[in-house]
Image 1 (cartoon, rainbow, N blue to C red):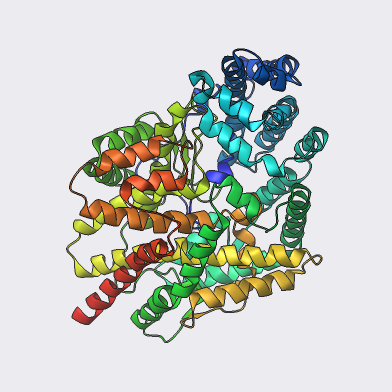
Image 2 (image 1 turned 30 degrees about the vertical axis):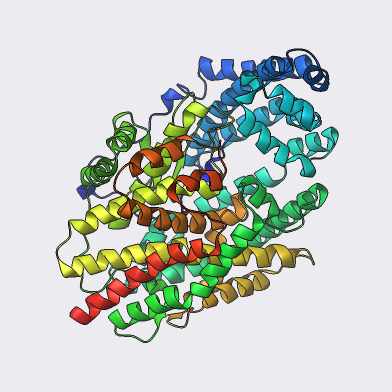
Length: 616
């Protein structure tokens, strides 16, 4: 089952303000494709069916897999068990998806919050009966399991079985696994929910008005410098007032993870994430090293250029994502955003545009800003028997069009991978960002090609560079921050001051001397949800962005057939390792030079900006 947090979008997406009439009618999603309502007959039936199926599955197979693998027709018998397991996962995933999407739509509504909590508890209790299955599969002798996979019925599931076997060294005895599973509801899941409700309930006072976090973060991109400063100060004030609960949540979750890692035998704080991402530690280390080495030629260089545009030596932190001075700010109606993205997708591949169009036609998108709605944006895959849903907070900024392109990239990927089924459709995070970032790049290139005005062109290039810095440099700084927090936590609880100090050290290193980190910025770690929901998730964004930059360079040079190969890669879902997926494009993420190639794309865009500067 995919957690919506795991598919949440990149960028610590800049949040957005109240709906403006100029945007046109914004779509709200129709969740009836999952269930007609929280009291519906269908939902109650599925909850009861899930309970019954899980119990029956345990009775049918617990303690019997080794004998099945040794008997005649082992492949068919085991395949039948996997098929039943997969069908149960689909039903559980549908229930969880519905509850979490409803909750994301308004996490301050007590009715939805209770429903979400109750469904989580029911699913955790039911799926307790399934825990034995992968543990027992891993106890089957490798030779016996390989022999059984010679039967095509079980061989079909080889990618999933191979993935399950990778978990083998970190698995615990059944009773301990059951305890970990059942206690998650009152453990990390409860702290995750506490964090979500804390953030959704925060209010920031600006000019006599009390704003939610989305609207306040959005002001950091306002054309008025006074509003940007006021927003930054309001954020700092409210974050500071809530440092105690944020610090407690962070300490508790870091300790919870340390306990889990210690029991399972993970050596490094991020090894569990690398395993679930199906990526080797040395590949991630090479990425981090390459990005950190590139800070001076990327972020440091760009922000020095931006400070010059503002007539300053240094920019205060609230001007980091400010729009360029003297460039008219456009408000882009929803219909234009839709047309822009679909045209860009269609020029690359009509099939890609066709899949994306269904999201608009069938109300799979929730676009307006609403009180209590989850900040940011995501594409939730739900389950293969249904379809993905996209959440946005659309406010008509050019960046919002990029967010739409990004999330639809995820959505297209999820639709194309769905035929692999519930067990093999999900993609590791490192590759999950590929389609989203590629979709963004297609849209950006389309918009840039249609822009002849030099000022607008410069503003677009600057926005793209900022997005890439936010995706690559900033996310690797986030990863470095998380490593420091989790490593320090091993020696005892961290004070709020200590966490703030660690945050400032990675921020000043990554942003460089042209950004002045004023008082209050030390608390800005508090609102990054990935630290809470998905520890060490953040490097996946940098991985995806650098990978897409390299992929796009291949696309620009390729004569034909690239789009077909690209869609095949997306359709593979979780059935292939990153090395296998990239081989048809002549790319290898294990080669340290691979990352330099992706980073040079960003450096070249900064050079283009410097050239535009000289021409003016």
